[in-house]
Length: 428
Image: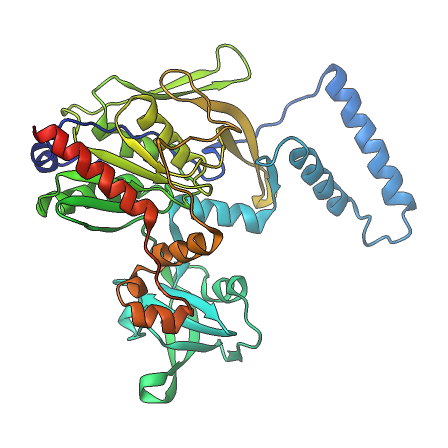
């Protein structure tokens, strides 16, 4: 069941300036489909036969028989075909297709701890609530020194994450060192499905300005977004800042869920246009409640892509929010995900998306109405603050753990100033 947005929030936030969210993506708007066999005709049949002849010749004549085995040649050919089309189409071998599915659902088998790697040491940032890690007593700051009895030597983040993840109900031994107690210990954990949060850090800023960050769009983003709105409403927020900086995209339906509370029922949020003239698909609000009508600012930067751009583009296109920050990435294409044989898959660009008035953002990006460009050092620092809100609350610990001073977030401050200005005008 789709969560309903808060009538309390709608009642509280009544200043004269609206919002409108858009949609999502992860590397494009992701749709899942099943690949079916097609008998090639004409040019396609001839091309397929030509590729087969070349692969046969390589298989028979190449000097290294191990490198020219048919399965490996076929995979290499598929990589070449897809990756020659555009930067977002690709052939996904089993491991990467599984990771893509996990990323789109925000669910995976694991122990429920967020970790960081600094100076070749793996430390726990925080255990997630109600997960095996938290229940086992793992604490923030604990250092992971071994997994299943194997010491972590020259660890990498990908390597450690891969070892900690696994099928639900399987066990993993994690060796830890707790600095505060100067002791090593091992806990045996049973992996579970872990659901990561994509909407976080909801809080009040200066005055009654509500703030929340959307890190990506997953299957749970809509539900998390409504909960965040309700939490801000309970604190009497009267305006909203949606932070989409460094957001790469996610799942289309969740983006629509996020957009609906700000649109009237039946109002166009966006549309996609595929290869054929008839391949147009419209996405309209299905909300039965009056739209939330508040001053809204949306933060974007050069790493805001796909879904984040759709959100910002729809808001800007319909004059329902002020866009603050830097021009976005410029990713406005739709990828369909096809499940192939042997657990493999394919991501293929099948359409482009457009804002309600027909504006495309592909290879253009969204231009902010209030431009605030950060220096590279600032951008890196703000990125750390966004990814580590637990440390950002304590400047001394932030410097000790991350080796840099907290810098003022000029983009966020500009958004607050814009919101407060709209609020004052709306109250006159």
